[in-house]
Length: 431
Image 1 (cartoon, rainbow, N blue to C red):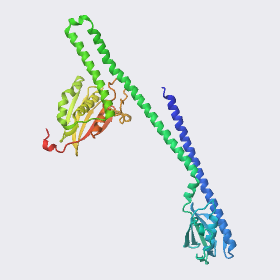
Image 2: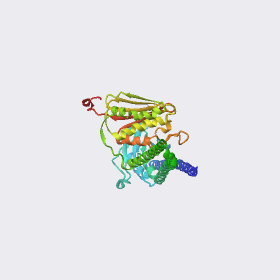
Image 3: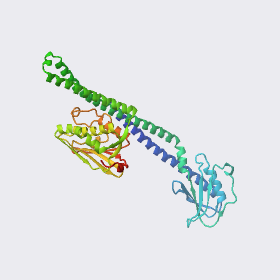
Image 4: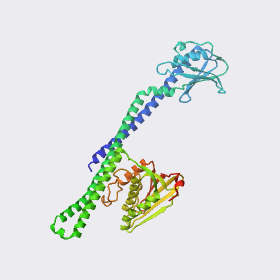
């Protein structure tokens, strides 16, 4: 298969980009942990310097050996016994935590060591350069008992995020590249599928055209013999064959042109009021022809109480022919086909059911795709271009109807079309 090298290349590319993503995530997480650890280390060092300043500035303060400890990602504790002068404490906190390596706003809390009761707290904005190094005189002083000072950094995550800007930007670029790579793979694979379907279409089209052309050629050669004039019945037979095969070719060409026109100009609907039951009964003789040839059965269950609808008559007739023709094609034995109508709420349901080979689950969503034909072994064992159900879907969509496929392999298929009915039918009668 010529596409194998491309598929291998795409697979290797996918593996490579996946590996790059995993590696990037690994290093991103590692860098984030490292930035967090650096932040914690800088905070602890700064708070230890605060503790040293407090120890030197106050002969009444006693600093414990384990003076600073981390309580949580955003909270650190400074233990101080005896007097806590918040004016001095805040000055040193501002001074030590305003270094470029930190410079993060914080809130400090004064807690009684024994009861953990909060006695004071204050938010500190390090962007306030005017009062950054000023010593306050209006803050409280706690002289009785031991106290713990909790320093809380509400913007720790944002601080680390800023430090991770380059990593985050590079990760974003990699994600964008990955998205476009995956999207490109999707487009390429879709093109592969389209090419395969078009190949099948061309093969089937060649087969569909080859048979009538060969028949016409043979008939024309026979008619070229002078002795054919001596046998009028034989002459008429070959003329009729040529006529039928020509009509067959014209129908196939018309179908292709019709699909092309629908794709480019959408569908031009000439909607009119139609009695669906009357239309089905009108078409019944033609619908039975192929089924009777195969000694099959066509069963009608016209149970809908309301059967007046708004539809394009030509396209609706084509839908019925296509569904019955499709049911006959994919039934290996004598076909048994049911046309069933019923009313549900304000909608009329029309179903065409067969007991043929059915459709495997993996193909059910694809049956309405252009050129798609359910694989059945030999590509020519079922005639057609793979356009019938695609045409059906286009017509249903143009009418704003709904279509549903129920199918089980080796048990048959059931196509159900849901159509809004005319509520004014009660004035027309149920003919």
